[in-house]
Length: 417
Image (tube, rainbow, N blue to C red; front, side):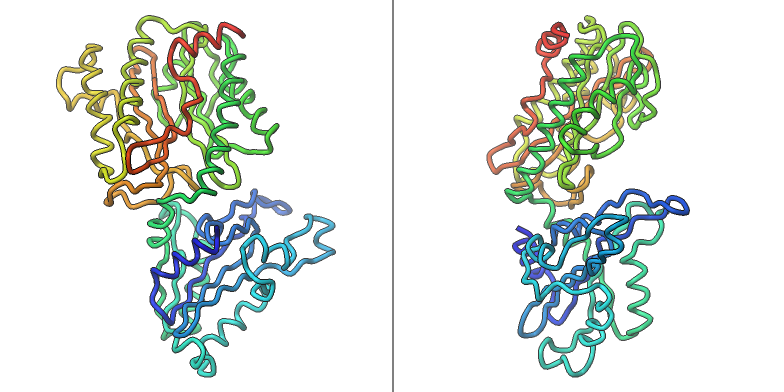
């Protein structure tokens, strides 16, 4: 699949250009330890390689296109301490390349020098533009390996134009191929197992972090990790959108909101469910829950390819507005912001909040979350119900439909604990 993705990417860049993608390097944590390595998602999307200090190069020349992968040469001595790295042969198989196209990372500069020399013009033409993934999670985040390399490249070759490639990848990654969909579905299945485990063990008086540990056990059993920090929020804590301390004791009568997801082969599930710690929803909890459930279910039934992202957001929001009026929470539409203060959903994939162009209609093959919510701090109730859906031309397929969300189903499972 990675060779198909590279082919699609190359179609979006001009001839006589080079594109460089960097896997990244784990940041230093202390004198003798680094943080866990997390591969750059665009690099992984195009290569399938999950290894630090690697570079993917795509050359779109005047006469031919060439792809090269640069990785660390296996070091038997270093392997005694940190484990083996990919051989050139294994890297070639993973990335769908010939072994001759996999090279020692130490030869990267030499290869670039050759490509920019006058002697290579006959093969690729005059290369004067380099595309580099210059995306950064936050403006305050440290510069990435790619950004540092772009600065070095510009200093070394002042005539070069450095252009960003992340916009092209954001558009391509909006549409998932069959392999990506199956990987997401696997992450969702394990997330389901974790939530079922929580339901069978949840009880009043336990701490939120104990419920989180019940979920993590299932992930560990399946050799997966959380795709993001788990939210296990009881009572009023559930009205805080990014509550992750998970250190409160679950009180009698509390509902507990779980926003969580497994990560499988870099792809994420993102599911939210709300369970009554007692095993039974109160009348008021059920009234609020059913309004949110209505917004969740009706939106999934309505959305399809070609609908604008804004229309998607507005559709579910209006259902929440109408429901909040029935509940006696608001009288005017604008008042909904007191009880609903996030968007209805987002793209999902290699990133939990995946890249995509929200100014364009939702495309066929996109994976979205649908996560309406109501948060009533004065009543100590926060409800959010989130599913992961695959967009088709005729509608949507709920990839997480096997995760219980009807109140009667939740209560039935919890009775068996």
